[in-house]
Structures are given as structure tokens and as C-alpha cells.
Length: 165
Image (cartoon, rainbow, N blue to C red; front, side):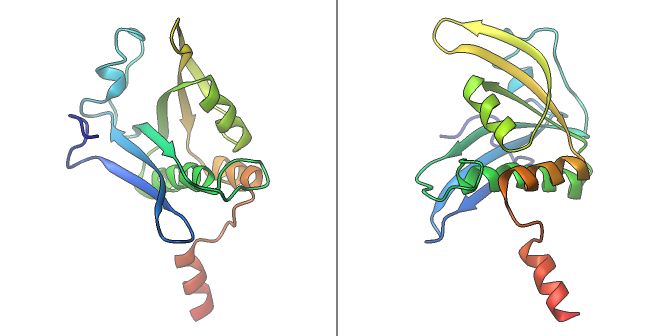
């Protein structure tokens, strides 16, 4: 599925299973250009908006067919993607990630060590509560994710560098 938000400036983070098959992904959009909150979700949240190189939006978070689970009972792929979002921000000058999500994702975020500021809530008959959240990216948030998920704190690139030293 491709839409108008799949552009040259869109970033995709992907998680692969042990068999090297894609098991999860998230799409990250700069808020300097059109994004979901400024487009399809604007009628639900008319008073919330972002337009900053320091704030990116996470959309299309999906994990499927990942049977590996971390100690927090969340799939390894979901944990890796959330950690990857934090690392992406820290490595690229992004200070905040925003997302529109449902109650199920709210629980997943908490179980993975992410606490956020809830900026808005919209209730639908079909989907229940829909939220807009904002996460401030920091070393402390990364440490919280690593603690909650049980993921190792050293990336493969860091391990190679450390072994060579």
C-alpha cells in the first residue's frame, strides 16, 4: 500500500526475523511537509499541528509473523522498531516523535518503556479512542526502552568497533 506520504523524504525502519524475512516496519515523516496529522487526521485533531525539522511523525507501525518475544511480552520486532525510532532521532537531530494511535498501541508503548505526552483524544464508534502522542527523544528514553524491552544496548556497528579496538 502506497499513498501520497511515501515520498523521497520518507524514512522506513524495518525489522527482520531470524530467517531474514521482513517482520515489521514503521514509516517516519518529517512534519515540514504534509503528514498524516496535517492531512487525514486534521478533522479529528484540528488544534494540533507540527511543522518542524525537529519533530517527525510515526505512521504505519506494523509487526506480523514475529514469534520472538522479549521479556516484556512484546514481539522482538516491535521492540526493535521502537528502539530504532529513538536511535534514528538521536542520530539525526530529531527531538520529538509524534503519532496517532489507538488504545492497544498505548499499552504497547508503555510496556516498551515509552512515556509520552498525550496531546489529544478522539472517540469513534468503530475504533474507540484514538490518541495523538508526543515523545521527547533522549538518552534517558533510549535507556528506558532498553530496560523495558530487554534489548541489548550495543548495536552491531558498535560491537564491531569495540572488537577492533
